[in-house]
Structure formats: C-alpha cells, structure tokens
Image (tube, rainbow, N blue to C red):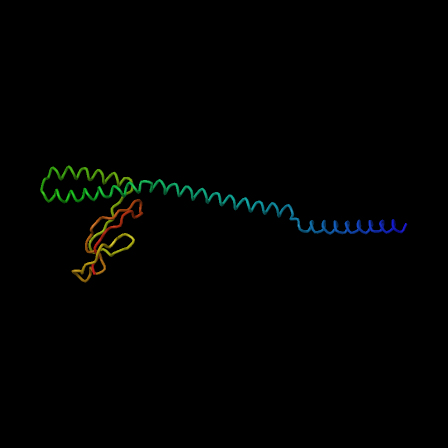
Length: 179
C-alpha cells in the first residue's frame, strides 16, 4: 500500500503545482492584458494615422498627375525650338535682302507658331547684353575680353535664346560672357 500511497501523494503534489502555475498565469494575464479603453485609444490612433497617410497619398498623386499633364509635351516643345530658331534666322536674312512681301509672309507664319507654343506654356527668356550671368538660366559658350570694365562677368552677346516651359528651363540661353 505504500506504493499506492506514494503515487497518490505524487498525484496530489502534481495537481497542487498545476493549480499554482495556473493561478500564476492567470494573475500574469490579468496584469498584462490592456483595458478596453487602452485598446480603443490604440486603434483610434492607428486609424487617424492611416487616414492622414491616405490623405497625403491622395494629395501627392494629384500633384504628380498635374505635373505630368503640365510637362507631358516637353519633348515636343524642345523639338519645336529648332524650328523657331530657323524662322528667326530666315527673318534676319529676308530682312537683309529687302523683299517686303516675303518678309511679311514668313513673319506671319513665325508669329502663329510662336503664339501657339506660348499658349501651351512656352516662354522665351529675356536675356540682354549687360545682364548678370546666372548658371541657372544661362550657358556660357565662350568668354571674350570685355570692351568695358562694367561688362566683366556679365553677358556680352546672346547666341541662342533660352526657353522655359511653365517656369522650368527646357533650354538654357547660350551666351558669351566678358572676361
């Protein structure tokens, strides 16, 4: 019987240990589990952050879409700049030859093309001799000795007109600067 008694005592000890462990786990779970108010506050915070992030996403994509449509024809505009340059050279040569009727016809076509491109956002840069050289808008082709002291570091001659498309430079003005 002593063997049965030992087994019985062992069983009782094991049950007591399990009960003690279960009581400890229950006590730990009660202290670790957040309250309903804390859970609600946490979920509300997550919701507000997610909503703000989504609003920022919508604003950013709307801005990117507007920029895309605004500058979508940039490559076409750049290719048209060569045609504008050719028209300007043709006007200078026709003006030298003195053929008034030819000059008026070419000038009419030039103005129509220029007006259409201006409607789409193309603007020529206003660069004149004596202006300060600015690397954000000008490209220096060469430097020559300045004829006057005040022309040092300034624009002496404009070789090619620069253009902007909706305030973005698409071609720098090619200039000669004084040294």
